[in-house]
Image 1 (tube, rainbow, N blue to C red):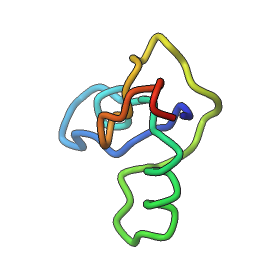
Image 2 (tube, rainbow, N blue to C red):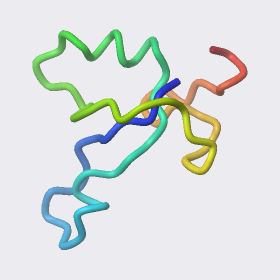
Image 3 (cartoon, rainbow, N blue to C red):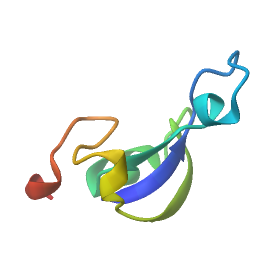
Length: 65
């Protein structure tokens, strides 16, 4: 699992809502790496527990990785 910047609510006033950060599992990172419309903007680094224990895209728990 890695911390990623995702596409969010682009009509929001706050940058953290436009480009939220969340943990994303390796399976989703691989799945969206070649997708034309990927929800992942950037991979920021390793897993951060402050952003939860589940993948923001598929809800896979960190223990399942």
